[in-house]
Image (cartoon, rainbow, N blue to C red; front, side):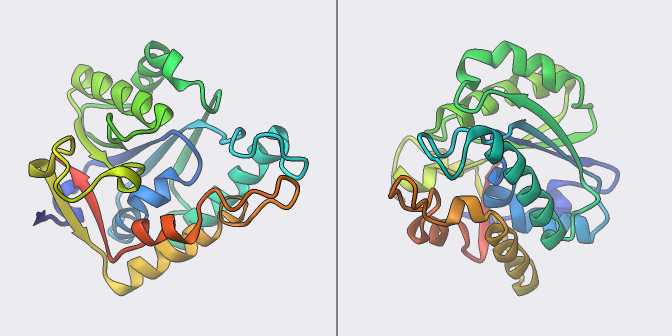
Length: 226
């Protein structure tokens, strides 16, 4: 797998637009990259498709309303840890878990924000999570219309794919190495999502993002598909 640099992915004068199906996807997939881009002074726009309100079904601790508020607070804190507190966040408030049925509407939504000189970072269109895939497909369609550059990011793929899995476009994969400071910033940003990394005693369920999952996503590099 070849390597690439943040300055090559998002050249000077370009804006990074992150399509995030849920609060935390922007950090899990590209937190280190965003930290590097923020340090270089690149403009960053995050299109938050949902508020992540469906992550704890049946919970008496985390109602959908409370989650939507909490996860927005967590995202703000996470962006501060990345040094990207100046990033513009658009909350689309689409239904969490319902993006698959809204792909045309997502394309229309993205058309309001994506410009021809943008670099769009989106979950891989075959990532293995319905919301991620719908977001990815919509981003693919709109970047083609706008003439923007598309970069796909595997997130859920790390939970199911093996190194030789033929379903993964490994020839398109590039590694973005994270220096110790960027990795530390990403780790602190992930820790800001307490609702996702702590167990829920009201349902006896473990964390949405257990340690085994975080270990795959907090390595000293991130992977993008070009």
